[in-house]
Image (cartoon, rainbow, N blue to C red; front, top):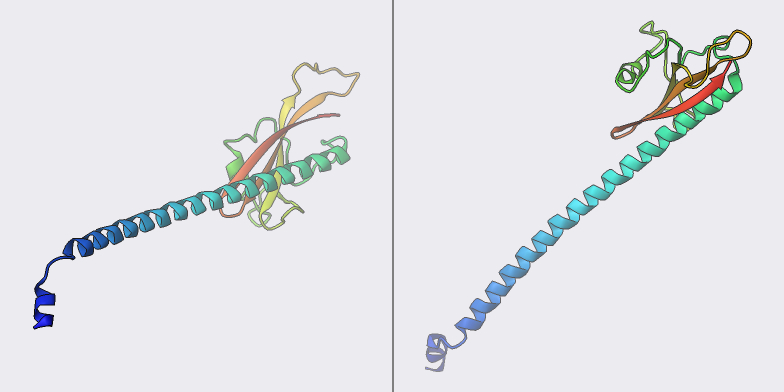
Length: 167
């Protein structure tokens, strides 16, 4: 008799419904927090990849500048990674140059950087006589050169630096 009256009593059903509603809300909040944290982790990973590629591309460009400072007259010391035809290499055309290889018979081949030889490369392009300098027979002429560094590792970054050389 005691058990039958206990199960027929409806005094606590609101507490059970309230507990279920709170449990459902906590589940929704937990799932939302999980999705937000996954998005934040993805953003942070992409930022790390971008920065790594940017700094490796910059290192490759600085390495090219270091090589240029050792060559002196670039017309006499032409390297395979130098495009000396004036204004042939720019940010629009540089994409084509990254795929150049000796096997394809290309004249200008990007040089692998010691920074990361499998992912970073550099190439330079002659941009003409430096602004403010005249062409004269009696002295060397200052030339503007664009240095391009590239890193392709889970994405790609290309950086361009200006350089001037007198020869």
